[in-house]
Image (cartoon, rainbow, N blue to C red; front, side, top):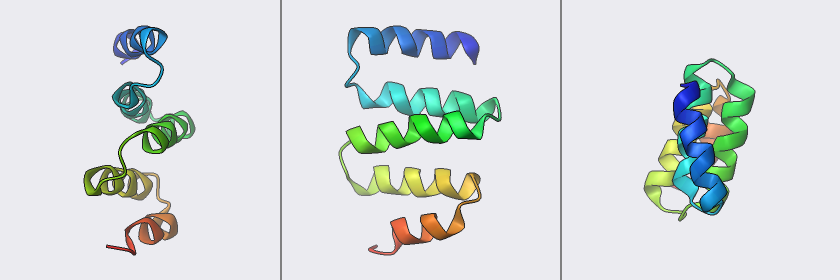
Amino acid sequence: YDRAMEYYRQGLAIDADYAPFHREIGNAWYKKENYEEAFSAYKKYVSMADQDETTTIRYASFLVLAKDFKKAYNVLKPY
């Protein structure tokens, strides 16, 4: 995961506004069980990505994995 995160960081150096890099860094941190860093990266992704159903569901799924059930519920409540 470290090598993947390095590649994504290199991508961010080229285009810091490319939201999927933040998502993938968040996924890598999650796999490394660093949930605080994972959540931070994923929040950046959500704030930058198109606010469609897929993004919302991914965010809610991440919240569930992070055991933040109340926030996940509130994110999905409008749907």
